[in-house]
Amino acid sequence: MRRTAQREQGDIRIRAVAPWPAEHGEEAGHVELSAAEQADLARLAEVILFETEGSQIFLQGQPAGFLYLLADGVVRGSHTLHAGDRQIVAFYWPGDLFGLAQAGAYVNSAEAVTPCKVYRFPVRKLDAFLVSNPSIQRGFFIKAVHEIRTAQRQLIAMGRFDVPRRLAIFLLDCSGHEHYFDPATQILSIPMTRYDIADYIGTSAESVTRAMNTLEGRGLIRRVTPRALELKRADLKAFADLD
Image 1 (cartoon, rainbow, N blue to C red):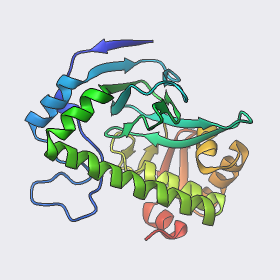
Image 2 (cartoon, one colour; image 1 turned 135 degrees about the horizontal axis):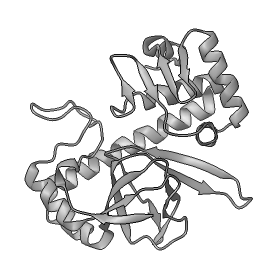
Image 3 (cartoon, rainbow, N blue to C red; image 1 turned 45 degrees about the vertical axis):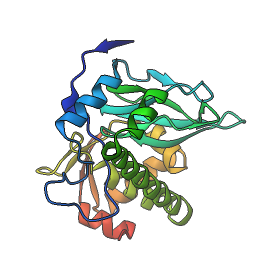
């Protein structure tokens, strides 16, 4: 179920780490957008609420007429292979853009992992808007570079690390999102299922459970509930051999 909501440009934030040091006044971890730029973008978009977990946002192969910006919640991007197997290619968090297209069609499907709010931009209108607004175009470029770095890192993790280390990297990535990680308690609330995690890190749900046991046995995490983990972030980072 979904419905249109009123525009609230205050939550138009693009999550990205620039490839160069932040300048004075720039918000760490987000592209800098002025209130006027947020308002301009908001006027282009339709705001949609997907209120049910598992709601379909768009399907792989559908005509790609829109680009999406996630304002709240978590979305999974998945690709279905010819044999019917599903591979989750990304989890999108608040501030992420999604809706990758090729030859006018969506490359992947997108579904709501949690209830979520998205800004839906008509691609042609957004394209024309960015041409005439180079400062905002720069923000979208920074986001594109950020996504390339993220994809390369995921390729390294999938190709070089065992399942416990892949899971450790995934948990560390999740802990970078303020709505799901409490720095005071070091507790991470995981919004997705172990089946989703398995389809993202390239293994089975049973292997995710075994890897979770391995991390807990090493004292790197502590399960508070099935979806809440206390993380030892420094130890996890050392275990995952992250720079």
